[in-house]
Image 1: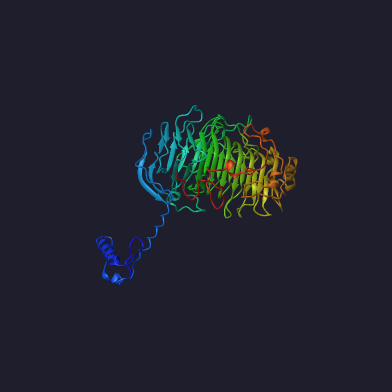
Image 2: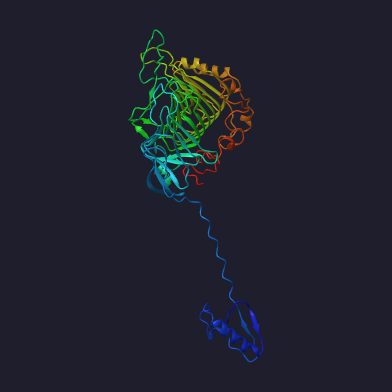
Length: 535
């Protein structure tokens, strides 16, 4: 046996016994040296060598992997101005950590702010209102709610959020700190890639003109569909919620860099909200950089009003991705739509009722108008037969667009009724990979008539060979199409040098304010749509 010490030394000659004895005394006096005894030493000879071997160093411990950043709950709820304040509802835990839950008041009754606080989420319980309805003829803004960048708000079941007519919201995130409106299941980590209908959604109401009045007053001798007090009611709500007015420039505030996830809970039978619903919102309302993810109904729907939207992403909607109706005057620029394979209807559904309440034929006033510029639509749903559908006499304009239909039998553009065909503003620089039936006419319109309208535009090709990469990014074929100057159609539009929504850089317009999913991976630093961002 050998005695092992901190370094290897060889003792030779007569001093060997003396030296080893000294070492044994020192070694055995050490508390750290265990089982020090004679059986651990080779008996020395009179002139032999005594060899003491040291142990191999203890292996360096493997460093413990640093855990992903997790959230710890805020100490409490901040103080706000509204009468009922915030209610501390305890904490909620999920994969990204533990959060303090602060329940919003039923009504924000004075100007107020929801601050960003690390480790805090705001709960939308039942219906939450910004202000109360100020009426058809009101002016000014009664209550304004400000939501700071990075704030997370969640709902469950029938909960939804309404900015009532005559009030406003300033919900302005940033490119790297979007505001997230989502579901409780998303917070606790049980929402998956196909979850939907987990809460209601966000509603912005205003005092801009609408058609399809709740109460029609007709004077057929003057104008059978002009109603000076035309307003509508928000669908599915227990409490009457009117919208509409006469101010096309009305403002419901500013809504920029927002994600709305897993919306569309059925408020009443067959009445669901979208991620974002606008009703009578005026052109003074700013809507930019908006993501709708997995809405069980439409991605967004505009009922009347004068709506301008820039940088819109609708991913995984189960009904129509973009629905426009009730006299809306809508301009939408730089928009991407990607469907899930197992759900979804038209990518655009566009209506303007052509049958009046008294049975008089004609076009509703205001006539619905939709102009879409720089868009890329990816149809993937097996239950959808057409990408774009217009009916009821609305005025449609499509410019600088790329449409990727699911199969050779799917239709790029469908037009129903002669009144709709006559109202088309124009199609220019629109390409689609249609094959067997790229256009469809219905309800008195032939395929040939729709094709003639397409052919009357410039640089259209609905039998186009697509070369898209990463689902949405233009390839050589798309970038070879000459762009149309859409500023001639609307002053809201900007001059573009390419067709589609993404010329080459997906992050240029759809960067970290989006989230990633199996349906569409934007490469966003915000992370997965099934998780929450951590700052």
